[in-house]
Structures are given as structure tokens and as C-alpha cells.
Length: 454
Image (cartoon, rainbow, N blue to C red; front, side, top):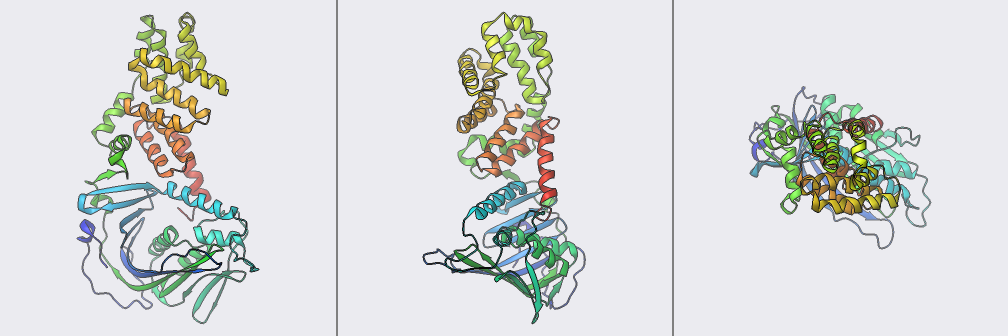
């Protein structure tokens, strides 16, 4: 099965070779597999997935995996921690952070473990460990978790189980690949089928694509069996996937109905729009100083805060220098006081104060919206906070902190993909903002703790 569109044109048509015992050279290979999936009910009334059979082409090269099947064309950029849905016909692609994929997977993992009888059929006493079953279904596990699957080898099969629960098996005959190629093959399995990290690591260590593999995923109500049969392997020329999509447009699913997502796409495409927004944010306190000198402390405060939102610099010193002037204005004093709000009543008062100012200071509405959103978020009113952050960004796309804090809200409400897109936009708009370090540390912590997944 060949790749589609522009990527398809890069393949050289070669005859498949016999796969038995061969070791393929460094570089790219195409692996063709047939994936059969079926489910069996363990309890009365359990819904089972319909049986499916599909042919899948896997292009394996160092750091990259391109999958072509009935669902379309998908590229995994392991080095860049992203998944790309490719649309060659229109030269567009969607990008999802692998950290977002992981967070969705982690949430599913936690839900499984919270089920009272997860892993066992009703009225059946099993000896398998539920945590191992969950690890196997989701493809992740806590590296400090002592529960592990058990392995045996007999009759030309490598078998894995937990107690009396079968997990996986594969033939001891197959096709040898390089370590990098095996890593990417198993990476595809982890992202699609699942598989306990220890089982998958053992498969990589074997250095061979088995002729046939079976994975049994038991959730207590059903057992899903996924069989992967090797059809053929061939060497193919390396493809520079980033180069192939270099002139394509990056899009976000749903952007046709959401103006904010359209703007986000403009930022993420790293074009002139992003450059102009980032350039507009490289400011100092000159506008704030001018406002204070003109006897306008309210606009002086808001311009000072705007610089903080763009660059992440502390406004304390600048505001302290004008404290006497601020105290002469009741409204300016109220705004200044709202910056230190720390209780629900104070947050509510701050929002009310800021809303009153929007009509009088239309040129500062974006800054006022960010301040309102921050107070609303601290009150737990995430829906209103999200709307306010969106309005702020649409009014002034250079307000970097709005992307970061909106990303926090998306992740807190299980819209992880949008959350990480906002973090990426934040880094492009204000790469030197201190909050970028927090995002880098989050990435590094996940990569370190769950190295098998990434």
C-alpha cells in the first residue's frame, strides 16, 4: 500500500522481498501490516466494537513515522513531539502536541483505575493485577509502579500475561530491523494499539518485526483483540517530511467556525502576521510614562500592565514611582487595589471595577479583559474567563500572557490540544517571557517521567 498525494510521489516502486530473517539497512523502510480487530463481551449487555480489517502502510525513519491507512495520512514527528494530520490535496496539515495526546491518555488511564471492578468479568475471580491491565490498555505506566507483566516463551511464541489474564503474544520468527526502525514501529503501536511499556520495550529489544502479533485489551466488560500480521517490508528512499510540508498551510480543526482559531492559525504559521505581532510587543514604559505625565493615571496603570502582559516584566517598580499620583484618583486607586485581590469578594469587586472602565477606555479594552479574565479564573468561573481572554486576544494579539493563561483554562477543561496550541503561540509571540520556562519544565517533567511514551 503506497502513500498518498505528494508523499506518495516520493516512493520508488520496488518489489517486496522475502521478509524471513532479513536485516534491513539504516535509513527508511516501509512496513505493510494487516490489522484485525475484534471484541468479545465478558458480561451480559456489554457493547462490543464491530470487527474490522485494514491494511496499513508504515514509513519508518529516524525520528519520523508516516502512517497511511483508511483513516488518511498521519505523520508522527517524534523529535518535535507532535502528530500531523496531512491533507496533500489542499496542501494543509493539522498539528497536535504529543503532550496533549499524553494528557488525554493519562486522563483515560486514571478513569480506568477508578473503576471498582476494572479488569475482571462479573462473578469471575481473576488473579491478574488491574494496574497492569490498565497500563497495557493505555500504553503508559508510572515508572515507579512495581506491578509488571510476566513473560514466557514456548512453541515459537513469546507470551505475556498478568496472573491468568493474557496480555500479548507474538511469533519468534519475523523480519529484523535496525534499533531506530524498531523504535518507530513500536512507537506507532503505543500511540494506536496500546501495549504495556515493558512488553513494547521487550519487542524493541528483540530487534525483529514478528510475523504475527496479538494484543488482548481487557477492560472487565469486553476483551478487544488486535492482531497485527506482517505483510511485507521494503527499503525506500529517505523523505524529508518537514521539507515536503514546508510550503503547506497549518490549520486547526474547527477554524471555519471560530475566528479565534483563525487568528491562532495565523500566529502558528509563523508568517508576517506573527512577526508583526511580536514586534509590536517589544515595548517599554514610554506610553505609560506619557500617560502619567499627562495627568492620566488610569491609562498609565493600564499601559504599565500591558507591558507586563507582553514581556513578563514586573510592573511594581514603575507603578510605585507614580503611587502618589495614583492615590489622588479614586478610580486609579481602585484599579491599583484590584491588582492585589485575593478573595472571592475582592475578585468580584475587581471584575465590576474593570467592567465599568471598558466604555470610558475603549483603547484599553484588551488589557481590561485580561485583568477581568484573571479574576474570573481565580473565582472558578472558567467559561467567563475563557470568553474574556478570547476577546482580549482578538482585540490585541500581542498580549502574550492571554495565550498562556487561556491555554491553562483549555487544559483544565480537558481541551488539551487547544491548550498546547495556545502555549505554542505564546512562545512565538513572546519567546523571552518568564512563563515559557514553566511550560518547558512541564514538558521536561513529562518526558523524564514517561520516557517510554515520548
